Structures are given as structure tokens and as C-alpha cells.
Amino acid sequence: MNVKVAILSIQLRLNSIKKLSTIALALGVERTRTELLPFLTDTIYDEDEVLLALAEQLGNFTMLVGGPEYVHCLLPPLESLATVEETVVRDKAVESLRKISQEHSPVDLEVHFEPLVKRLASGDWFTSRTSACGLFSVCYPRVSSTVKAEIRQHFRTLCSDDTPMVRRAAASKLGEFAKVLELDYVKSDIISLFTALASDEQDSVRLLAVEACVSIATLLPQEDLETLVMPTLRQAAEDKSWRVRYMVADKFSELQKAVGPEITKNDLVPAFQNLLKDCEAEVRAAAANKVKEFCENLPEDNREQIIMTHILPCVKELVSDTNQHVKSALASVIMGLSTILGKDNTIEHLLPLFLAQLKDECPEVRLNIISNLDCVNEVIGIRQLSQSLLPAIVELAEDAKWRVRLAIIEYMPLLAGQLGVEFFDEKLNTLCMAWLIDHVYAIREAATCNLMKLVEKFGAEWAQNTIVPKVLGMANDPNYLHRMTTLFCINALSEACGQDITTKQMLPVVLKMSNDQVANVRFNVAKSLQKIGPVLDSNALQTEVKPVLEKLATDTDMDVKYFAQEAISVLALA
Image: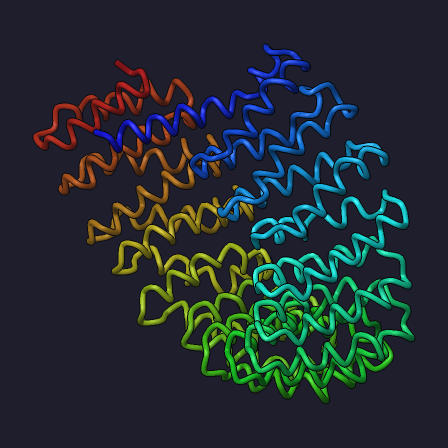
């Protein structure tokens, strides 16, 4: 009982906090400043959910305390919230402080906001010092040069703090802080901090320094990058911790753009090769994910030569990697290389790799290849594609494992759109129809949905000539499951095919099947009539559908009667 009371009490306080703006409006700006805010500041000892809601609310309180002139009144409660133990509350308090900092005038910023940042930065508890890291960049551009020097000093101190959590917070904001500093101070202050953080004993700090590297590299002139940034970046790319190397791989495209073509060619290409060959699968997967982007951003004059000589040999190794995540990451981007390397190189070097991945034991690898076939189609043309890759796709479509077949079905509309209607009819139509009589229900169901998507793609006329006759032909199949599939297909296709085809071709078959010997088929007839009813005109409903449903409503089977009566009710035929 006590637990219930406690939960109820928390919920009541949470609701009160969420209505704080209403309370403030009722009190007026003066009483909000003199009574409500001091009360909130003094009672900041509550459940985390309540404090989180409070931190969020205070960020939107400027007009409720009297506008920008009095916005500094919001600082005391937010300062207290920025020192609490729970990270999400602190982060939200910092977010609100950053927001209201923009509403301070330059004078108020120095008088009220900057002292708050100093207090947090020199607080006894690490919680306040971590919060301070997120506030330096928002006040630095708008204060005097004397105060700027103090802010830089505080940030330097936090970058070498004894507590790893504080150094981590400082490292995460290093790039952001660098962006608001004058270039001279970036070179004199930020680079030394960046180098120190990138050599920190904690890998969680070092990996955040890699993120900062992108921002710092974009700020520096090209001639300074080699001496000020590259030694540290080379060190990070070969770091003993896989997490740091992973971060380098993950940020590689951004780093490549930041350092420019010359350094990319001399330094980043060898580094990227090493990451693609890394001993940790997570690092290889992150690097593999960047292959296409990295190749696209290479200097055009020797892009092809770099890819063929340095990148492609690594890619060939990754195709047969032992880790499925690595192969899957590569499969999601490798097709994009065809547009970069052109037709001849694609046919000679890439097609064998695509083929190997289409036959990979991991379904995700195969699907990533199938879903990007349009890239290759654009380069080598549909005929070449059909001769090389389509046999492998057909093979997968007839795989003994039903989940593999299911995956291919799900990609069939995409494939159809890439191949075009003529080619689809020639090569894949038979396959799609064969799935309708598969022995696994999930395959038959997916094949039905597949037909609907194909009709949406190719149009009602194509359906009338190609699909509908074959579907209706299954109504006479000796296997009752296949006869039921006819009904499921009609349900799916009626809307896409339209009233004319549904009334003239599909409805007669459904009505005929109402005499089927199997009760399951008969009650599915009732369900189908209910489904296609809205597509039919009122004359067909009254003269053809209603008599059949009335007959089924008197069927000896309970389920048939139930579904027939339901259809009569839904279609308002009673």
C-alpha cells in the first residue's frame, strides 16, 4: 500500500511540474520571480522524473518571469539541477541553460551567467564540473576579452581534471568550443588540449577526442593540418583500444572531407586499408560501411587507380570475412562502387564479388545486394545483369529454407521496379506464381501481398492480361489450400484492379466457389465477398452477392453461417 501511495505522490508532483507554466501565469511575473522560483530552488530534492520535468519547463520560462530583462532569475534553480547526480536531469538542465543564455544581454551574461559557469566549473562534485563543459561555448562569443581568457583557463583545467567523467565531458565539447574560439587560440590552446585528451589513459576519453578532430581540422588552414592534427589522428587510427579505432572508422568520411585530398591520398588511404583489415570485427564493419563514401570523396584525377590498387583488394577479403556483420555492412554499400568504377571494371572485378555475396549463407548479406541492384543496372545494363546475377536470385527464390524464399519474395516488388515489366514477365513471373502454391502458408501469404504490390507497380491492364487468369485458374485446383489462395489473391487484388475487372472476371469465380465441398473454402468465400463488396456496384451486390450470402447464411457449418451473416451485416444487404 505504501508503495502505491508513493507512486501516486510522485505522479501528482510530476503533474504539478508539467502545469508549472499555468501556475506561473496565474501568479503573474512578479510573484513567479519572488515566490515560485525561490520555492522551486529550495525544494530541488525530489524523484528524478520530477526534476527532469522541472529542468525542461524552466527552459521555456523566460516570458513567465518578465522577459529577457529578468531571465537571470531562472539561473538559481537550473544551477541546482545541473549539479544533481542523475545524468539525464543534468543534461536537461544544461540544455535549458544553453537555451536561456541566448536571451541574456551581453551585460547580463557577464554579470549573471558567466559567474554561474565558473561556480559549476570549480564545484567540489564532478557532477557540476561535467555540466560546466556544456556551457562554455554558448557564453564565450558574447563576453569581453578578459572574461574570455578566464573561460579558456577553466576549460583547460577541466580537460586535465582528475575525474575521467569530467575529462570525458570536456572531450565531448572540445570541437564545439573550438568553433567559437579565435584561430590563434585554436592553435595555441585547443591543439594542446586535443593532443592531451587523445593520449588520455581512458579510452572513453580518447574516442571522444576523435570526434573533436573533425571540427578542429575544418577550422585550421591546410598548411597547419599536417603538423598540428595528423600526428594525433595517425595515433588514434592505430590505438590499442578497438573502441577508439572504431570511432576513427565511423568518422572517416568526415575526417576525409576535413583534411582535404592531398592528406587523404598520403595518409588516410593507408589508414583506411588498416581499418578494413583490423583484427576487431566491429572496426572492420564500421570501415566497410564507409567504403563507398570514402571512394566517392577521393580526388578524381587518381580515384580509380587508388580504388583498384589499394581499396579493392581489401574489399575482396571482406567479401569472405568470418563475421556476418562485416559482410552485411559491405553488402549495403559495395554496389555503389559500380557507378564510381564504370562498366568494364564492374563486369570484370565487382560482379564476381556481388555473385559471391548473393550466395552468402547470411540472409542479410543477400538482401543488401538485392536491394541495391539498381546501382549496377544503371552501369552495366539489364541484359548483363540478368546473365550474371539473376540466376543466383532465382536459385535463392527456390531455396529449401522457407525463410530464404520469404526474404526474396519481400524484395520482389523492388526488383521488379528495377528490372521493368518486360524483363519481369520474361524471367520472374513464373516464379511469383509458383510461390502461390508453396507448401508453407507464410510463403503463400507473402506471395499474395507480393502480387498486390506488383499490380500497384505495373497497373491493372498488366494484371488483367498476366496475373488474373493464372490466379483464377487455381480455383479448380484439387488442393483446397490452393483454392483458398485464389480467394486470398482476389481479396488483395480487387482494389488495385478496379471495379470492372473485379466484377467481370473475379466475382463469378468467387460465387462459383460458394458450392465448394470444403467448409473452409466456403467461409472464405463469405469473407472475400465482404472484402470485395465495396469495389462492386450496387446492382452486382443485390443481384449476385446477396443471394449467395443468404444461401451461405443457412449453411450446415457454423463458421460458414457466422461469416456469411457478418458479411450481410457489413455490406448492409439485410
